[in-house]
Length: 248
Image (tube, rainbow, N blue to C red; front, side):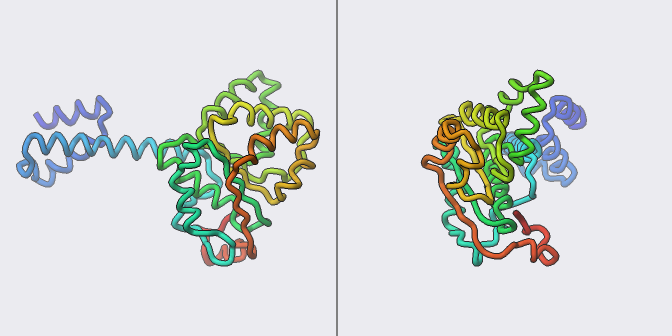
């Protein structure tokens, strides 16, 4: 009878419940639970399993550059306030549809910090996409040619948090500006950005070009954004000693 129950659990894809029930049987602990306790235990096991699988799917779909975590952020000599980062990690900024801008020279950990906050957002159940800005714009330009542009924009719009890494590495041309404007407009006041850049915000006008469009874009992403300016030497110098926490 128990084997039949296990097979039915597997067929219904109750994998958490299946593992919990099987483990309990194999350990000879069935008699330690009352019927209501056993039901509660199995339901809790299934709930935890589904939540964990949802988080893993979110992390996979986000395509983070680094396997980053809040716990592994290096704070020393980088002008990062630990309490501020932990406050951001509760993801209230996503609930409030606010943005975060992370600036600093190359190698100081901008991308890692963005990935860590994005990772935490996935754990908290938000849909996240991490992308290099130049690659995203190039992808959207190609999408124009194969009629997948609207579909790609719709996918981006559905994300609770969009992380644009290495913003401003290269200037935007007319098509790039138009694509960026559409992304910003679709998401404005609906969802959040984290933007990392080596270029100070005051120079973004020149990077975007076309003053009218630059004004419209920056007004939407910079206004009320939380700004983090990282300082210090490049963390890549520590790569051999701390491979899991070296970042940019």
